[in-house]
Image (cartoon, rainbow, N blue to C red; front, side, top):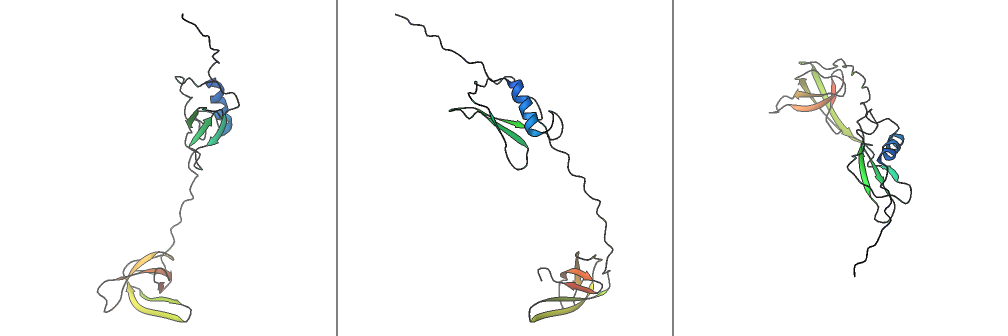
Amino acid sequence: MLSFFLMAVAAPTDLTLLDRAAEIFAGAPRGTPGGPLAPIDRRLRLAACGSSPEFTWRSDAHDAIVIRCPDNNGWRIFVTVAAAPAAVQATAVKAEPVIRRGDPVTMEAGRDGFAVSADGIAMNDAAPGARLQIKVEGAKAPVQAIAVEAGKATLPGW
């Protein structure tokens, strides 16, 4: 004997509503910077969710939204977010060199109660905080230093 069972099938989750909710969560419309990149794929057939879907960011980068149904064995999807425009970067003002190629330079390094210095000749120009090479008499290779002020440099890490 054959028995036929009818199962009540709930309507699948409305993807249009999820799209709109993702826009609200992101704070920007779809296709704009900071908003969902594209609509949720209409080929998806997500089971009806017995409670409200939860929206969270995938990471601190806010590059994707995670939408999940908290029901037992619920579904989870990711919605890619359009990249927000990079913050306008201030134009770097090039600092004038305080040490020029050929200048005599005193390199200093030290800690509490300890100091070492050496004199040399700058092999390139350097602004304050920039690295430069200093030729020290008797040394085979130049020494790398950091410009501090005119005629004065320090060794990296000191």
